[in-house]
Amino acid sequence: MIHLQWCLGFSFRFTAVFLGAAAILLIGSDNGEEKLHDRFYKITVWLAMILSLTDILIMITQLYENAVVIQCILRLLYVVFDIPLFPVITAWLLYTCKETLRRNPALYTVCSLQALKAAAVSTNIVTDAYYTINGITDVKNPFSYISLIFGIVFFIVIAVILVRRWKKLTASQRIFFVICDLMTSEWMIIFMECFLIYDQNRRNLKNKEAIIRQQEEIIRQKEDLVKRETQVAVLQMRPHFIYNTLMSIYYLCQQDSVKAQKVILDFSRYLKKNFTAIVSEETVPFSEELEHTKAYLAVEKVRFEDKLYVEFDTPVTVFKLPPLTLQPIVENSVKYGVSPGLDPLYLSIITEESDEGVAVIVDDTGPGFAPSDDNEPHIALENIRKRLKTMCGGSLETTPREDGGTRVIIRIPIK
Figure 1 (cartoon, helix red, strand yellow):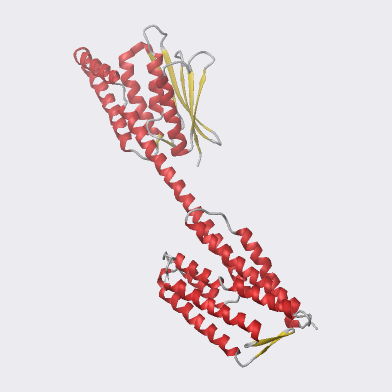
Figure 2 (cartoon, rainbow, N blue to C red; figure 1 turned 90 degrees about the vertical axis):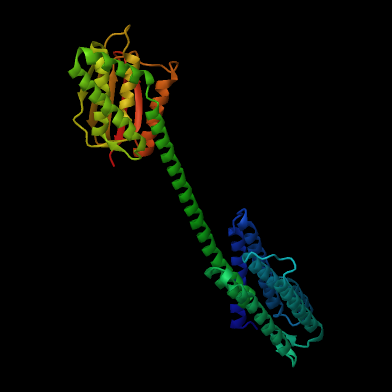
């Protein structure tokens, strides 16, 4: 006759086996430090699963009076798989505490006790010294208390091993090993399944944090790179531009001292903005960049006079962009568009606002440049494009104009 207690026990053990199989499938294949941790986990779950499955088979044979021999074989099989369970958990504990497993006294003690316990249980199967197999229930004999003594001694040894390493474990590890040492194989599987879910979430969170730190480091490196590129851009001011400007000032001092003073003032403003950009790590107001560009163009206007014409249409100025964005683009236009053999260069700087953001448009009537041209303008524009994307999520486009020349469009999104 099947009792309710038997049904509950069978269902409980069957659930434990099912959860154990699910736990093994859920365990990842991490490398490094987690690899051996997962190996301990799998071995422990496998042993607990086999013990639970053996218990299920024993419970089934208990329903048949003539299956005593099969019960004895199954109980012996249970002993065989029960022997390594606690030594594996102990080895796992020692590994977690970063102790060597070879010749470890704690591991040897647990193995010895487990071997004695296995010998005692195996003897009972032959002699019935502790209990007698009798159908669904086992009848205890006078020596059954020896098994209880083994259990108490084993518990004390495990407790001492755990307490001596208490400070080396985290809070979750303490709970895990305490419960593993106290629970039966069925409860152990259910608990380990719950712990696996917690541990996987912890690992996922840890991996996410590592990814976030990695992304932050990449962003920091990009910002450092942008800063260095800005500094290089400043330090790469054309020497001949500075030389020609100084020579222009030299001749103007004799011809028109007032004009020379104005050029010196514009040139000093230009230099100040360049050197300020060296230490600037943030975006700057467009008004400052526009002032920098006007100072540069004022110097060039003195040099080229009727070869350079500039028009400004900038109603929108309340936004920010990386330093040295507009001025190098204008400088490129002047460098490649003003030449004795070319028509005068007409240059216009326009700002427009839309729902998407702000656009800064630089139009020139110069000859433009193709991919086969000198790489210098392309490198300069690519530098600006990267800084726009990194520092403010902006973009830069270059297109040829229908009437000749080049159009450069800077787009700054609204935040």
